[in-house]
Image (cartoon, rainbow, N blue to C red; front, side, top):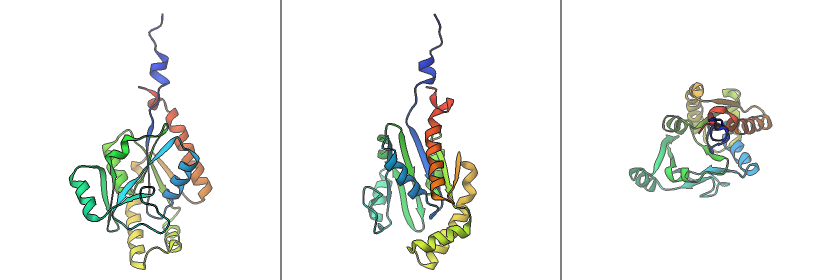
Amino acid sequence: MHDFDYEAQFTNTKPLLAVVTGPSGAGKTTLVKRFLVEHPDWRFSVSTTTRPPRPDEVDGVDYHFVTPREFEHRFRAGRFLETAVVHGNRYGTELSELDHFGKAGLVLDVDVQGGESIRKLKPEALLIFVAPPSIEHLRERLAKRNQDGQGQMDLRLSNAIEELKQIPNYHYLIINDELEKAYNDLVAILRAEPLRIARRRT
């Protein structure tokens, strides 16, 4: 008889909590949306925000859009895992989102402030930072989106420079220079991470 329980030690895996973050305009949301379409065994954590929806966004799918008053009510009730103020708007991940993992895991698409909060509160989380190849590339992307005035775009760029300093706190860095390559990098990370020995231990 052997007292080594192989199955108990190495064949059990838990769904992953994956946090994807990066500066505004780096392309993290585009990558996450495609990943979720092609990998239905993952679920998306829908963040709550006070900012108005963009023309192509759907309430309850892209974000839970609420008024500042309602956000504050939920905040005071202790309903958030993390919150942040980004470009003058409030964002947060409600604790209820963590009750519903997909078979493979749960993906959070959050700003860098939110990523830092989750890193401290959920040490088991997989942390992925999506970055532009350069600040100039980011400037061009924000200009092409044509969603912000010059003042707002300058604020986003200034914030991005500070946010990029947080890269050493993350497990993986994806440079989004070519979208297809960046997407393949994201897929590779999320496929490989559950195979790590540390993740397989009970």
